[in-house]
Image 1 (tube, one colour):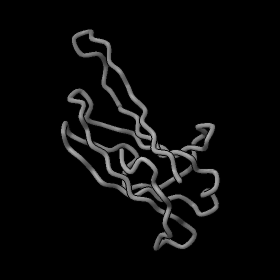
Image 2 (cartoon, helix red, strand yellow):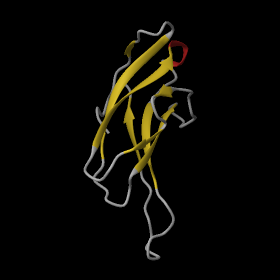
Image 3 (cartoon, helix red, strand yellow):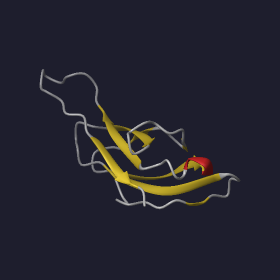
Image 4 (tube, one colour):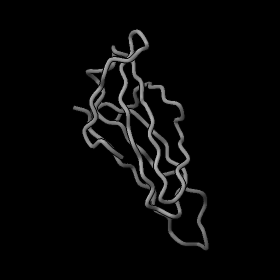
Length: 104
């Protein structure tokens, strides 16, 4: 997920800030990712995005905006993606990943 250190900017929506993120999928077994916004202690913070669960085909990429209330700017530390996996395929172990970008 890029940028690694995103910055908030003023949104066209009063009382909200936004940042733009990009994701690239290098994992053939993963097609869905869940987006989350968190405090430094990984407590969830309410946010708005076009999708909270994003479909990204293998070797595909997507760009999306994340919006939060201006009141939560100081509490927000991370924007994370977590791979969403279906059940085991051929009884192989599956690894789910959580990758975070830290806000400046």
